[in-house]
Length: 212
Figure 1 (spheres, rainbow, N blue to C red):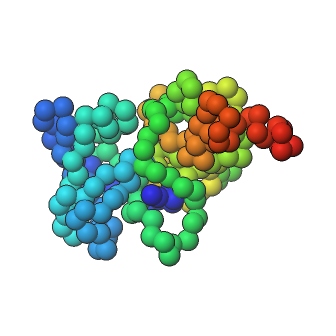
Figure 2 (cartoon, rainbow, N blue to C red):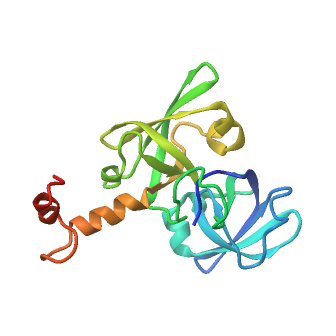
């Protein structure tokens, strides 16, 4: 589990593909000091497990499923990536609950500069828009962000200078792919409301209790 508060920008040192999977080596000075083999790290919002490490880099196995469903499949040597260590129970909850399980790949569609701030627009894959609400949380490339506005499958994110500086958002070009993870609360709520039968939480129960 993560919060979407990026700790540092890393860089892909190498990607070695074999048998449909890949071995990923990520460089980031000072990031690995309190990381152990077996720990989870979010790389652009994808939860991966450290299998080897030294003071400057970490190594990760990447499954074919992840390569197919996330921007990880397009990594090349030198690609900049957002890094976050797993959440500890004593950490501040600065963002929102991010699982590191990508729901789909979206597309960066534009940027409008407003003083030192920026408005970034994205298209999300069809079917994911139902989980996104205005002023609600969304993870884009592992970054906890707020949807300032939502119109069908297009969302606008207002970004402050600090976020632009410490994440890969400032390096996006129109048409670039991004990892999208929707708020897990929305997904569980939909599942509960769509359950068949009279058991559990459903729209009829909520109506009877005066919630709808």
